[in-house]
Every structure is written in C-alpha cells, then in structure tokens.
Length: 136
Image (spheres, one colour):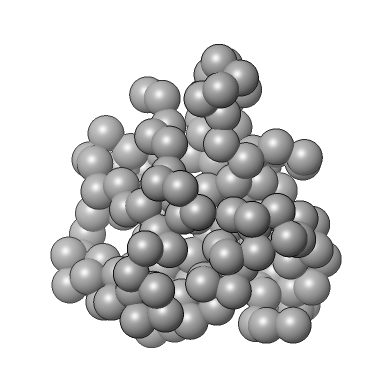
C-alpha cells in the first residue's frame, strides 16, 4: 500500500474514514477555501482504517525518492468533529509523532512544511493541552 506522492508544494490529505461523504466534502471545501492547490486528496478505500504505524512502516520501506515527510489523515474524528481536525503525522524526523489541526489551520501548516520554512516539530511543539495546533 505505497503512499501516493503529493503534487508540488501540496500536502497529502489521506482519507481513512469513509462513514460520511458530506463531511469529507465539507473538509475539502474548508481546505480549498485558502488555496485550491494546497492539498493532494487521496480518497481510496484501500486506506480505510489504516493505522499511523502502518503508514510509518510503509514510508520507511519506500525508495528514498518515493518517501514523503508528513501526511494529514482525515480519520473518524475528522469526520465527526465540526472543526474537522486532521491528524498531522510526521514520517521523517520523528516517525509517528502526531498532532491535531482544525481544517481552518491546515493551509498555514501545509504551506510552511511544503517549502521547508518550518519543521513538523515547530508545529507539534506549539499544540495546546489537547494536542491540537490552533495557530501561532
């Protein structure tokens, strides 16, 4: 189950919960409102319920030029919470480290990570006591 590579200067948003199509489209509208090219969406049922560890293992096994450094998961919590908090997952520096980010803050993180302006840890270290990033 190799991870798809995101488009240039975009981040991968991987759908892992398929219980609510309208929530998926609402999430996409929120993300696209900031920049329609900021995300590469993967809406493939093969990833239903995939674990963070499985993604870490898959990326670790990939050829060097096929590795991605982070991914945003649209999981069950993303689909049921009105803020659509994605699960951001580090696949490079601290594989498996994660934090939540409401969809409204996706673009800030994606833009900075995609140009290597900031590291994953910069955002993960700025989360609140619930493990959620709510802006700098």
